[in-house]
Amino acid sequence: MAINETGLANHAHWVASPNFDSRPIESHTPAGINLIVIHNISLPPSQYGGNGIIQLFTNQLNPDEHPYYAEIYSRKVSAHFLIRRTGELIQFVSCLNRAWHAGVSSWQGRERCNDFSVGIELEGSDFEAFEASQYKVLNQLLRALQEAYPIKAIVGHSDIAPGRKTDPGPYFDWAQLNKNLNNLSF
Image (cartoon, rainbow, N blue to C red; front, side, top):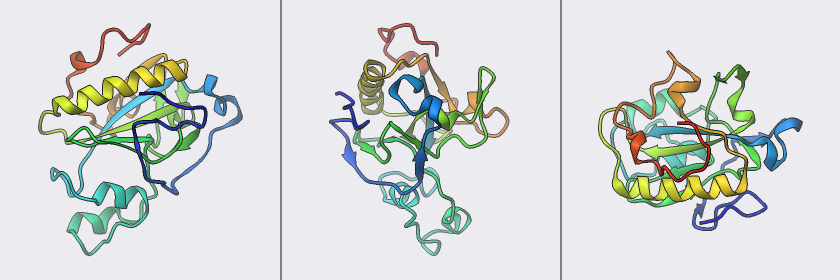
C-alpha cells in the first residue's frame, strides 16, 4: 500500500466526503502532517456492515432510519479512512486536506488536531474486540502514511479529547500495531 502525491491510498475504495477543508498554511504540505488519530465508529451503534457510516460522512444519513440517526444526521463529520470489520479500506478525504474527525482536541500543547492529523476510523465500538483483518490493514496503512508523511505519534481519540471521547476504546489492542514503525510513540 502507498499514499500518492495527491494524498490518496492506492488500495482504498474512494467515497468522496464533502466534510473537509484546506489545512492551515503551516500544515498544508505533507511536512505538516505528523499525527495519526485512531477512532471507532458503528452505525447504528454496535451494528456492523451497513451503510450508516458512509451515509454520515457523505451527509446522506436518513434520520428516520434509526432513532440514533435522528440525533446525529445533521453533523458534518468525516475521517480520512474507514477500516471495515472485513478489512475493507475506504477513503473519504485526501490526506492533504483537513478531515473533520477530531473536534475540540489537543496533542502535546497543540490545539485543533484536525489541522495536522490523519483520522482513521475502525468499524467497531468500545464494547468488543476489533478483527484481525482490521489490524492487518491498519498496519499496512500506518506504514504507508509513515512513508508519505513525517508521522511522530499514533494516538486514540481519547488521548486528544480526554473526558470527551473514549475511542478507540478498551478493546483496541495497541500491541497489535506493528512495532517496526520507525520512531513513533503510541
